[in-house]
Each structure stands twice: as structure tokens, then as C-alpha cells.
Amino acid sequence: MSILLVTPPMSQVNAPYAATPALAGFLRDEKIPFAQCDFSLGLALRLFSPAGLREIRGTLAGKRALPPNARYFLANFDAYERAVAPATRLLQTRDPALARRVASPGFLPGGWRLAQVHGRDADSELPRFFGPCGTHDRATYLASLFLDEIADIVRESVDPGFAFSRYAESLAQSLPTLAPLLRALRRGTLLTRWLDELVDAALEKHAPRIVAVTCPFPGTLLGACRVALRVKQKHPAAVVLGGGYPSTELRELEDPRFFDLFDAVALDDGREPLRALWKNQTPPHTFTREKGRVLFHAGNAPALPPPRPDFSGLPLDDYLSLVEMPNPMHRLWSDACWLKVPLTTGCHWGRCAFCDTALPHIRCFAQPPAKEIADRLFKLHDETGKTGFHFTDEALPPALLDALSAELLRRGAPFAWWGNIRLERGFTRGVAERMAAAGCVAVTGGLECADDRLLALMKKGVTLNGARGVLRAFADAGCLTHAYLIYGFPTQTLRDISGALEYVRERFAEGSLHSAFWHRFTLTAHSPMLAEPEKYGIVPREKFSRAPRFARNAVQYDEPGAAPDWAQVGQSLRRATYNYMFGVGLDAPVAEWL
Image 1 (cartoon, rainbow, N blue to C red):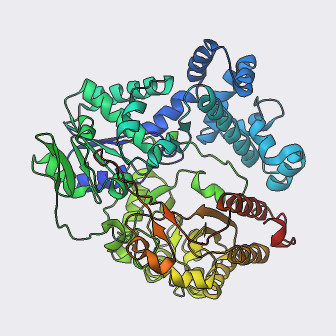
Image 2: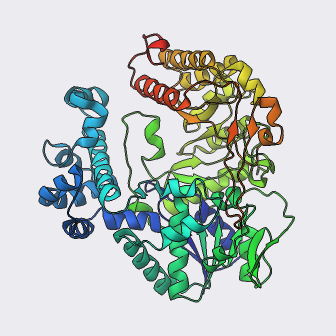
Image 3: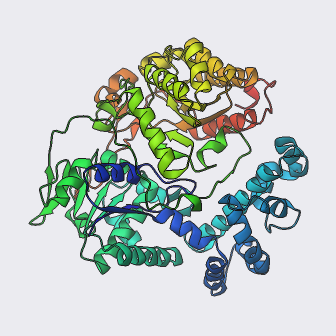
């Protein structure tokens, strides 16, 4: 008997999501038996196989009206069946010699993803991106697009909720009541049958007493609920839900029907709830149902640094290294099995007005000594053989990274690593150089609205001039850089947008920024902005249903006098930045994009 830690579909397929290894490390230290399963990877490998494609073909064959991509798949099925195993094997980095075969003209069928990205210029652009000796990278890129096209076919004709890194995301993004989720659970597809079979196999193998399902974001909610439903049908284990989604969106959970699926819903750090459940005690920070009513069991656990993750039981060599964009920084999120390791708990800044600073996983900060972190990384290397680490912290403190870099350099560590920072003054040129020398290959950070007035309004604690110096320092040290950007922030004007895009263009042009992405601003229920909306010129409007509450996070609001068409602005910003990432349009005035 053990605790089975589960990652549901779809999170990612290039590496294990951080949650279950972190909990596994805690259970290991507590000497509580555990196992872990990644159903996100398992479902992907079932799909991207000759047998999986045959089952897809059988499903499509019974349908009268099919979109063009599905018809093309059926007409060229033999080519798909022949190509899918070599493409998958190449992306698992099992057989590098396959690259020349996969990259050869005509080996991979399809090609609409390539056409969408490059149009008629693919023949000239691919050699420019990858060079004459870049056969492996080119093959990996083409194989990644090939799997994306299979995912397109599945989404269009088999299961409309399927995507590589999410599942039914639009369903879960706004769920004030439980009814839509319950309706979705009653619908079955080929993919849900595959997921049921994966769950059955895991239950038979591990016979767990507790099944703990992580739900990191909205796109994993339906998958998490399907896992719970199958466990309830097949096995007497208690089922508990935890992770980022419930910790953010289910803090006001009222609907007792949700506990037909889960015996408990744990918020924030899941360590104490799992230990209590294993000992048959009342779990703190947890919702349960008692006598038909939803009850919350509070608790006061101190903020502690995260434990050393434990990846045992996860098939690290089976993950797929995808390259869906030939940009060296952008590919880091999906290329290679970077072990996801949190170094700290919470955010050392914790003051941004738009952030969920009211929540414990942001507000409560704790960090271990740099020497202890180095010890953990060496231990993980010994256990897994991996040398690449993605630090998943909210924001890595400059003093901690400087001390860690000095420790890694002292020990001659062979590691490569990257993570998220604040573009703050503490990242001097000297710190950046030490980080790069110690194995840092990239940093990501928030430029947000890229406007000094708005940065001050949102209490970001950085300036554009300071951010420019940080980006320049890392780029000069040989590290790749990525910026998170926001549009549609309250009081933001089209003039502000134009200035922000000009700032971004300049950073790309000077080579200090290598990748960026614009996100639409969302007002959240746990941010300081909602507590003081008048400071930002907005009027929140929430509709509260008479039905028992399920989820609450994104809050709609009105901004009197706001005129921009933010949907159109967002498209223009993303189009401009996409071109900047490939060195295109850097000499053009930003007005041409807007």
C-alpha cells in the first residue's frame, strides 16, 4: 500500500511536471511509501504510436463529414503509420542517426504546420535557421510539427479538448459552478478510454491506499477529474486533489458534488495534508465533505523550503524533446528533459499589484542555503544521470543565485540550468557572469507593460533602464533572455503600447532580448488590485450564482473611458514580436505593426 502521485493529461511531454517529484521527495524523507505516474506522457505515447494511429483511423472511418486534415490523414495513412515510430523515437533522443532519415524530403507526410509558420519560404528559411550541419535540429523541428499535426487531427475530429499542453482548457478557465464540468465528464472519447486504461494499469500495479492527483492549471482539471472518476469506479483508494489550480481557484469551494470525485481537496503546500491523510488524521489546509456539507480544515504550517525532488519511477528516457519554434530561447520550454526543481518557496518580492500575493504560495517566502541547494543538485545528478535543471521558482533572488553559482564553480559542477528572475538591480554584470560560468544558460523575467509609469503603478520594483542593464548583462555573459509582457493593463493607452513595443524592438535589435510573449491582463481574485480597484480606474463586476460556488479567480471589470480593441492589439503585438524573434522587421517603425 502506498500513496500514488499522479500527473493528469495534459501538462507537458518533455519532462515531468514539478509537483509529483516534489511531493515524492517529501514522502521519501517521511519514509511514507509512494509511487508516481505521468498520465500526460502515457497518453501522448499511446497516441503517437502505430497502434494509436490505427485506433484513430478506426474512429474517423465511421464519420461522414471530416475536415480536410482528417481526410488527408486517412488518404495517407500508410505514410503516417510508417513515420510515427521513427519520429517519436528521434524526439525521445534514443536514436540520433534517425535524424537524416526524418529530415529527408517526403519522409514525414502532411506539412500544414510548416506552411502556417513559413509559407512558401520554408525551403529557404530552414537552412538559414539550422545551417548546413544542423540536420538533427532540423529533423527534430520537423518531427515536432508532425506530431503537432496529429494532435490537430485529434482535436478537430476525435476530441475537441485535446492539445499537447492542456486538455479542455477553455472549459476550466471560468467555472463558477460545477455543472459544465459534470456534463463534460459524461462525454467519452477514444482518448478518455485510453486514459481509463492507463489508470487501470497503475491501480493494478501499485494498489495504492491514497491517490493524490495534481492539477497545476485549468487545462489539467478535466483530466484530473477523469482520473478520479476511474479510481472511484475501480479501486477503494481515497482520492485527493491538489496543485496550483485548486490552490488558486477553489479557495471558496462550496459544491458537495465535487466530493463524489475527490475525498479531499488540498490547498497550497500538499505536504502536511498528505502526511495527515496517511496517518488517518484530519488533513490541514483541506476541504472535505461531511454529512453532505463542504468543510474547510484550517492549519498553520510555517513556510519551509521545498524538499529535494524524487524522480524515481518516472521514465525519464521516454519524454519527448519537442522543438516547435526554431528560436533558441523559446525552445527551452519543450526541448530536452530539464529536471524541474524549485529552490525556494514563495516570492522574495511579493508586492506586485497584479499578482496573487494574498496566497500562501506567493506570500510566504523561504530559501535554503546555497550549499544545501548544490548538494541537492549533485544528488539529483547521481540519481538520474541528468545534468539539466529548470528552476521553477516564482522569482529567484540574485543573492541566492550568486552564492549558488560560487558554490557550483568551487565544485566544478557540470550542470546547465535556467529559471525565472526579476529584472532587478541585484543582477549586476558580475553576478550574471558568475551565473553563466556556473552553468546558467537562460533567464526569464517580467517586463510586464514595458512602461515606467505602469511599472510603478503595479509596484513591480524595476525600471526600464534597470531592466535594460540586466538583460544586457546576461546577454553579454552568453545567457539567453526571455521577457513576459502584459497588454490591456488598466489605464494603459495605445501610446503606452506603442512605446512598449518600441522598447521591446530595441532590445531585440541590440541583441539583449532573444524571446518574448505578450499576455492579456487578467484581474484575479487574490490580487491587491481587486482590494483597491479605484486606484486603477476600474469597476469590478462579478456575477454570483445561486448555485453552490465552484471556482473563482478571474474577475471581470469595467474601465470607464477605455477605448482600445485589446483583442486586435494583442494580435498585432504577438505578430510583431514573433517576427522580432527571427530577426525580421527590426528596422521597421512599430506603427507598421499597430
